[in-house]
Length: 70
Image 1 (cartoon, rainbow, N blue to C red):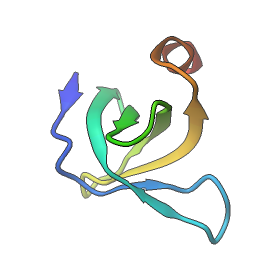
Image 2: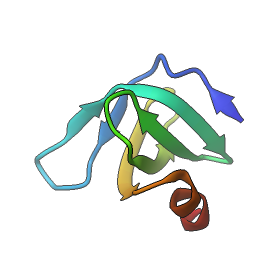
Image 3: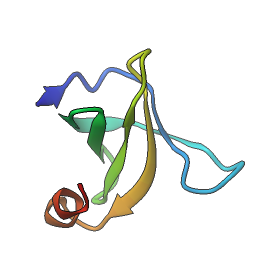
Image 4: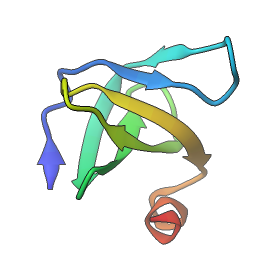
């Protein structure tokens, strides 16, 4: 399901180096999300938090790889 991209999305790939992502597309899959940022070709996988924010921990080169990662 496509989710509203107007939410806080954070890349937590490295401890202490969190980075805010600006999503163009967010796809939700039962608590997991795939995020396509505006200025990046990669797709990020993360979890949808209770407050609606998303914490991403994994990156993929394209949507096909990201979907396989689910």
